[in-house]
Length: 481
Image (cartoon, rainbow, N blue to C red):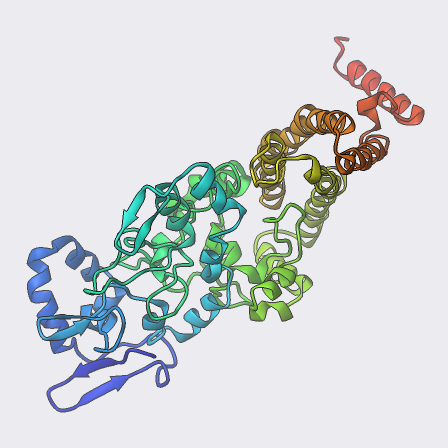
């Protein structure tokens, strides 16, 4: 269902729907319904009225009614001064005037963000951290306040409409980018385009993305500000023309990029896109990074047919607006090298070891110390390393990333695995004894591999000699002459 925009001109009524609109639309006059809304809300909600007054919607005669209009049959509709409206403005509503942007967004991972709810991450907020103490009418059996105020605010809640038309407080307010709306649509345009100014300048700010893309497991905001890109942005942000409707990198601005520049905004060769995955060549969310078309296929998204090579080509098109071909190509060699190192040395062996360790652990997710150790290695430290490399943040790649991965792999995970082996070998359960031997054999194989033999004092003689010579050269380089 598409809610139509009804515009009364005094002479005729024009009904505009997404089927008749080719793009953002300017209405001839402000509708009588919106004029009536404004008459009251200018007094009751002056801040909202002021924000709307500074927006492009105001200039286009798009008012309260055009966005909030509802049909009486809509599940979230309520009667307000003889007019049916809805509190939530969903992507379906925005599609009336912005069909291209909505279609791109709906095909992206952003719109599907709420589907993570119920995953291993969410078990932490619901069970490990939380309880069922947050009871609302829509959730009489309770919810975890940690999930409601944490996970759901970025990923989006499934908004529940109560019998009297009110929105359940466990699910509203919520601008999570994957919010599941009462009309069945997924997503929240206001996650980035904040009400009621819907400022393009604000949407282009790195801090706008930082509401969700920050913290121990995906610190893109912090990495950006550490990187040369972020340093340049802070120095020159007042010269980037971020309020311009036309905003083409290499044409309208040169001095620095933002998150939007690289992932969404126009170049001389590419238009704006609202599918942020179309320029990403690795999905670094899982323990082992996967190609984005693989993750798109899992969600049934059309991006499953767009190979990572094409997406990388798209991102390189952005990079080439400011950098040379050699610079861009060499960066990707470095990035892929870090991904390969993390995979081969820690992620793939770690997954194999965890699989063999499961029969010796408590059969409850996060019921054993090893669950937390491994989770933080890949979910926090491993992601930081990979994201750091992808955005040229050296401190996050090394000290907050690979150093933490290695430290916890060697000083936390391996000792815990060794302890499980020892306990398993002395178990009266023959299955656990067998499982312990399998784990011991795999652990021995991992530690005797080229990546880890240093840890057990078996570094290859030629490598030991090379490192000794390198240390000698380093010392000579910095000796006082």
